[in-house]
Length: 74
Image (cartoon, rainbow, N blue to C red; front, side, top):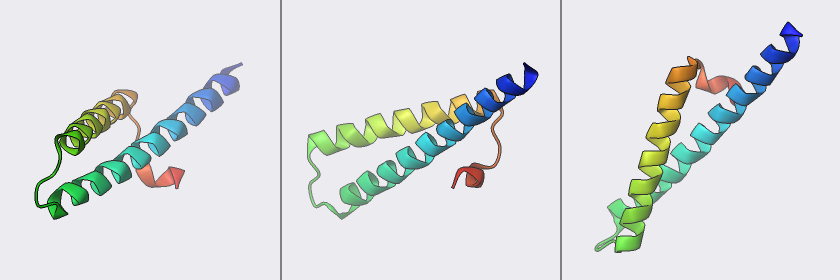
């Protein structure tokens, strides 16, 4: 019974790390688009701010769960 709980929490942790990595990649891509744009549209600026808020929320959740080692999920 104890092993099942550990395996469930481990898989959820791995999923969280994967989502954090994907969100970070998307955020970096959108920020590069904004940096290279002469006049970025309002839509792209809103997307960047939403992705940044999502990324920060996920980092706080990982910190709350005491997740270490983001490279383990790769």
